[in-house]
Amino acid sequence: MGYLFSLRVKMIKQLQLNLSPAAAADESAIKKLSATTATIDLASISSVRIIKRSVDARNRNIKINLTVEVITGDEPVTTIDPFKPVDVRAKKEILIIGSGPAGLFAALRLIELGLRPIVIERGRDVSSRKKDIANISREHRVDPDSNYCFGEGGAGTYSDGKLYTRSKKRGDNSRVLELLCLHGANENILYEAHPHLGTDKLPGIISQIRKSITDAGGLVLFEKRVTDLIIEGRSVKGVVTSGNEKFEASHVILATGHSARDIYEICLKRGVDMESKAFAMGVRVEHPQDLIDTIQYHGNKRGDLLPAASYNLVKQVDGRGVYSFCMCPGGFIVPSATSQEEVVMNGMSPSGRNSPYANSGIVVEIKGEDLMKYSSAGPLAGIEYQKELEREAWLNGGSTQAAPAQRLADFVAGIHSGSLPKVSYFPGIVSSSLDRWLPNEIGGRLREGFILFGQMMKGYLTNEAVILGVETRTSSPVRIPRDPERFQHISISGLYPCGEGAGYAGGIVSCAVDGIRAAEAIARELS
Image 1 (tube, rainbow, N blue to C red):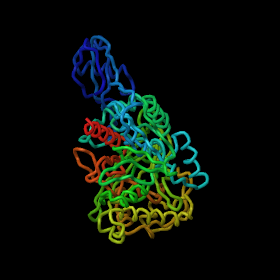
Image 2 (tube, rainbow, N blue to C red):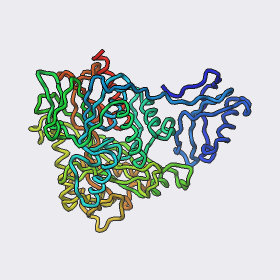
Image 3 (cartoon, rainbow, N blue to C red):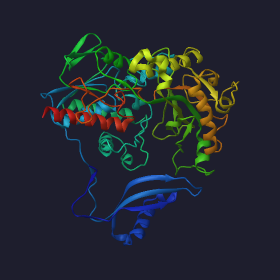
Image 4 (cartoon, rainbow, N blue to C red):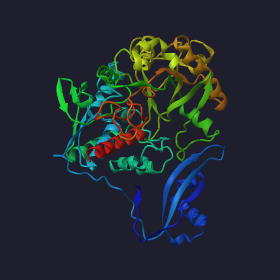
């Protein structure tokens, strides 16, 4: 995979360059330093291609690290390996439940493999979905089928679009990035250390992916919530959707995301084995972006040459990890509830990351001992704990989508915030003493974690920052186990659980990779 080059091109080995932000933004400076580093004549260089780019802000003298390929001779052919669709109108049909990254990339791969994907989505198309999302902020009304979590593109479409993943073992991450570029993403995602699409760019990309699926003869069906699985013996035979409509197939990819709680209940009812898995819950904290820039860039002005600064924090507190999650520089906090009487936080950033706010989830590991009071729910005990916290946030936020909030230093000191600063969360905030109603296994550890983070980042622990409750949907608390080689459910033949909802991935890229692998497993099975 990757870029393809003309056979006449002579490539010099990759070079590691360390430049000032100004030089890294200057193509001629990059080319000149490349020639010097490679000890070749500047005039002989036909092209310098960036392979990787990252910011080194460990010291006051901030640098940009570049990995480049220097090319001499003929100009390179820089073609991304194309999407290779097959006309699948008359081919075997495979059901895909959910049109998030796992479902959409599974559909693309099925088409390349000569199989017909039928994508069934409970929410609306990406354009219509905007109205449902707007209603959450304006009218405090949550559509349980079309919201920040459900609808075309899944949660990632309207909650940031970060493409960074640490997973290197489960598939070809680069192919996912290439497919995104083929459908409209900027090619800088191929080399940025922490690539990001942005919520303003993703809807157009998602629409193009749908077009590729339908142009090849696949189907994408909206507003069809799955209400039952058709299982005969120990084999899946299809699904039933709202309106009692049946879709039959011998192979079903279950890619419904971590918030489709009704799907877990259906699986439990139909004897689909599930198990509890580790997850985390906490709050979302928001600082002025200028403050985070000042801390991370050692007092330097960011200007136009550096990105909005981010952070990655983790500490152990009383035997549990307390860490930052889904950090969104230059972003907004958004309401991610999927039912009316709950409040759930998430974060997003537009492609320019130009909001005056920086926000991040700060969460605490949840362990089995925390779930004992919910043991009657079996493998869904973690979901019951999530529900309880989300309901508590709803009540403390005034029984609307307004969020309970507290100044950060006040939270740590156990002081009620008499006033609150402006925040990015559109439905609004209500002053609430989160330190008094968050469970101690979460609230107590958050308090200690924030103190430690304040020691790591001088100025972080401040009343300029606000915490909003609650951040509960970091990952699925449930896993639907599958055979590691065949990708099928361990006991239900033809059922392929994948992505975040199945407990095997987290984030856009790893979910997309998981969907691709599920499609390939089905093709192997059928061959």
